[in-house]
Image 1 (cartoon, rainbow, N blue to C red):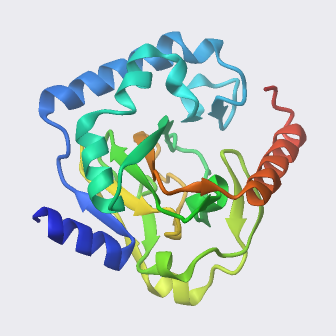
Image 2 (image 1 turned 30 degrees about the vertical axis):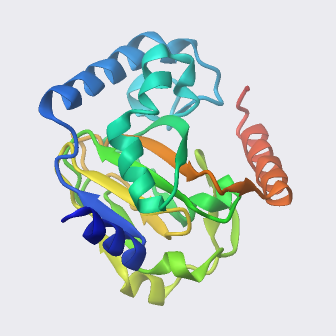
Length: 250
């Protein structure tokens, strides 16, 4: 699709797929740097920056955030290839919120609750998007993302505590109408997903006993975005309460 078609598709559905987003050598470099970060940096991180299904089992690492302490990822979060596409879809200049890594470890019952990213971010206007790159093949067996088409036009949905580490809040009124409009996003490694801050999405557990579901993500916010202070304070209080209940250390 040309740029105008990409923008129209994103505006209509609230999400977009860009197959084989990175040149092969760039994709290989990103994977090498992620492997290095996981092997050398992650063991030194506080609980609030590295989440596990079971911390006694390193292979169950499920989420990394605040990766900007690493020089490679601090610079990579503003990579022109990512930033230019984000600005095309947002329709304005944009700033990166930094790099993140997500995983659904093989053989773990770790669903991702239905949620909206901007419930966590609290931007007004909600001109924010998440760019999510598959690092390995993704399908229904290993927990592909499921988007509710057009849900970004409905605005904020009610959320409550989910008890899922890394996704502290989930939508409370997710129902049959949402499921009827869901699209299961099966991907090849190096395919890129992009979704609006209000797009409702979720993922089921990884039912594979051998395949993980790793991904790399960067969030971009338009320069018009302002923080909704009341919403941000509410969310941070909810997140702290969850971490305390789970015995995590910051």
